[in-house]
Length: 581
DNA sequence: CTAGGGTTAG
Image 1 (cartoon, rainbow, N blue to C red):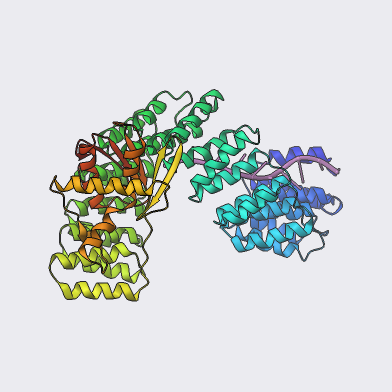
Image 2: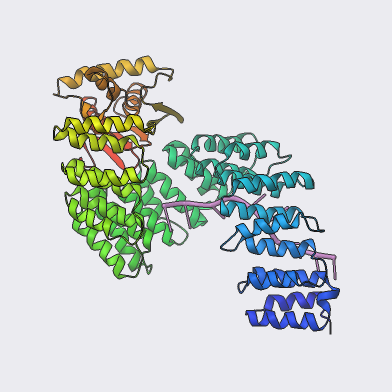
């Protein structure tokens, strides 16, 4: 007996196991419904490829043996299933096959295929589908264009993402969200924040949960505290704080803007339940600020709250130990992680290696790297090289550098470190050799830059920057600082600069580091006694660390610098990192 | 014949 459509629908939803799907399949087959009703076939395919008990190879088999020409719906069922499977590229090849089939793809087929591209980070294929979308005449579909925009953003082509956005006939909140999130995740937080403001001021759209996540992420990256606080106010007004995801982003934002106490305040007074991510965010927040004991306290409390720490929790705790130099505690944590059946990844090993290395236990660090079950990444060898430099271990430095060279590293810092090790032992021939190797390879130097916010405006500085409107005043301030520093017995640490330039030039290269420019700008553009906040993309350099400590005394200012790894809070001549970083 | 598609924290 043929099943009525609605009855089939109910049955399909009731299938709990693959066996039941097969029963239904055989019924449709024997009753002839698979022949007579293409929609029934499509439904069945949908179930095979998309339910919790999906079996994609069964679905593909079913598809190939379909008694009638597969309908667009049948194709869609399969492409959707494949797009969400562990191997999404198969959806793309099915989509290609479809262009040679009698049934035309529709907006949904394209949407599923694009989702596959997003998951597989397949930019080339996305372009191919984009042109297909245009030829099919579905280029005005807002939902489809949002998916397309998102794919371009995820594969890193933000220009294309922006073009798609600009050409959309109509943009709803999700379209804005996709671009804001894309820019925020693509390290263009300034543009993300601009869009966030424009959407409110110009379009009259109301930011939703997703919008504020993008905005908060941008603020975290920029250290844009005032903007972040405004978004937090909006979150409270609109009761978006019922979402744990939003609360987590707020906590992260305050922590990364330097206000770990505010982050903790939000953590404590959350109206919704805390998730594992909430705890992990708070652990990381304290770690970032060098507050190891508080990080470890939270780590302990999550167990009391009935949550088992996961690998990320351990990473946060290890990071806290790392920033405070708690070697034994860190090693103990690592062991207990392994004991609780969690699998450490490269980052966990990296943390412990760094911890051991900086405590001078270079040999143990090396043993740790050698015993790792996975391939050690560049970061691990770099931290071993760093430790070897600190403790003057030439042999270990050579081992680490050799590995780095083998891995094709051409980062300036690696060469500089090795050269410094040789220089410390007055092995000038070796120093020369390293320099020559540097010249031969096209050594890359990641440009350092710093952000500083004044009255809601973000000012960005690069090393030796003269593009700021007030650059003359800034440089004058730095010269004033330089002369004052001399009386404090300061001498520039020119060893960290490796160029074939004279001593005085070396001093200047150091003198105009982006973080110094930002701090000087802070001194001239904020009121006396107000704290100065700076965000830097790289690790703070040794010389800047010394100089900023002195500046905090001379000008009686608290200066907070967030570098790539952590916060440094300079006050009355000392730093919260206790010179250990 | 029906519906199915977009943006989301550590």
